[in-house]
Length: 417
Ligand SMILES: Cc1ncc(COP(=O)(O)O)c(C=O)c1O
Image (cartoon, rainbow, N blue to C red; front, side):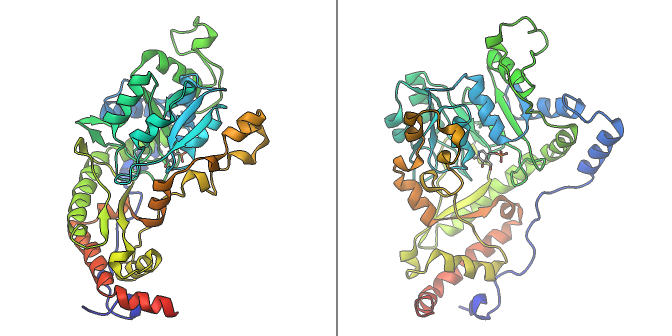
């Protein structure tokens, strides 16, 4: 085996990787058209086109563009009228917004542990966390794995609790041939710059329920009654703020959406090929894919690293060695929310609604051993890597195998210096 690039050897691959976001004349032409048209605000033709096209792509009846994924989650909870005295169950491993949206409606986020194979909400932990106060469940389709919708929906339906799917990582995944975002009562998507469908910033919230859609429409639009609902009672058209997007964002979304199906297919094919190659290397365990998944979208590709099969080589050292071999390095998962520097419910006085509430929102009261393990063991490659050629997947596997072949020597070196 040749010398490691980290120690002066020849790297496995020193070419380029795909840049993100992918963009071309499609974005430019639409943006110029919006600029010339002068209708820059909300509810313009680009917004209408995107709502129709993305709704059609997902197979969902009602959808609204909103400022970001954080607000999409918050408005979904507000559409369900979740508020003070309520609990919302979320996985302990996710971006902080999945939990923080519950704080933003004065509810208590309840953190539950994850299934170690997919890093998504563990249905048994969900069941154990349900109380008479539970008013919503937010499973997250995280990184490159879907949450187990069959089991989560079975628990939710048994207790009559609505599910909001957090699809911020999965624009285009399918469960039994139906898109993520159409299984729950509502779904929220982030359209922020790092996501596979994005306009720099943005969000989308959708539902198949007409009554909820009217509430969502009012909620994103300063509490204005949707057309035809002018005489609806206030409870049906709640007061709200401005959560709209501009025509410039919608124009970029339309252009980006035109590439999404082809990109999703390519990522899925590359990911499956990469998993096949990596499974042959002792110590590497690609995250699992439920048999019900008929199309997997990827925000990131995840694998579990077992240091004991790599001569005890610390994950950080593998990361450095891969960077030298490939020019890219895998990252780590979010910090579990019971110890996340970005999830600090008790850092704002407005959350001190009562001493009872203050205690209830303390994230450290939750035990999340599988989240902790995942944060220690899992490595993630950005979705952009999966847009490369098939042969580049083989280079990634080759680089891992090379690092493993040198692992003992590298470990010894790490121990000395
Ligand atoms: C799982 C998840 N949910 C929600 C969000 C919030 O989306 P945004 O950043 O658009 O507010 C994100 C953003 O990264 C996310 O990853």
